Amino acid sequence: MRRVLSTSASWAVAIIRLMVGAVFLSEGLQKFLFPAEVGAGRFAKIGFEAPQLTANVVACCEIAGGLLVLLGLATRIAAVPLMAIMLTAIYTTKLPILQQQGFWKMAHEARTDWAMLWGSFYLFIVGAGAWSLDALLDRRGTSSTGRERLPGAH
Image 1 (spheres, rainbow, N blue to C red):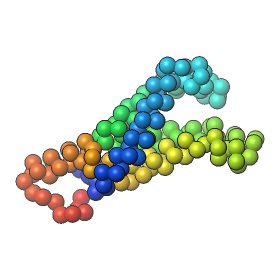
Image 2 (spheres, rainbow, N blue to C red):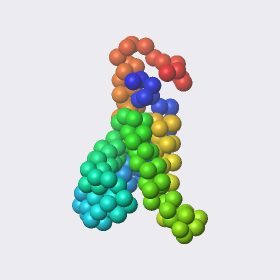
Image 3 (cartoon, rainbow, N blue to C red):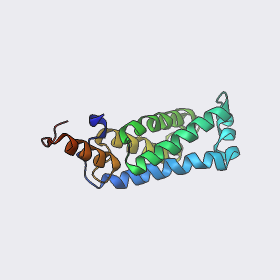
Image 4 (cartoon, rainbow, N blue to C red):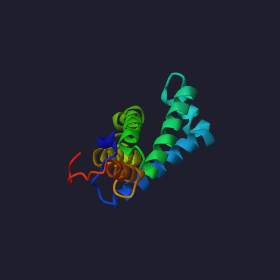
């Protein structure tokens, strides 16, 4: 667990966490607030089987993942389902645009999807950064053992 929480990234990672977490939290909430447009109705239009269930599961993952990323808590773990959601969104909604309307239309429509995918991937790699609950828990774990870790040691 220490490896999952540890991070040597700077406080500036909080900026990426704010962007990624806020967008996922907002999108998850909107799936419940506006189900016909961005929730079950949208999932049905895309062609998902059990669109109500799928939309609710995705919404819950986005809300929970967004909150965890915002707090910097279990950030690497939270990033995994968020990346899966974005890969699925690109595959189901952006590839058809690419096939039907070409690269530039797809590139325009996919800009947020790509930003969320690569932002989540970045957080998966570097962790939550210095201003996070992960870093706080990691520091507490180090001090409770009475030993300090060498810089860069995991």
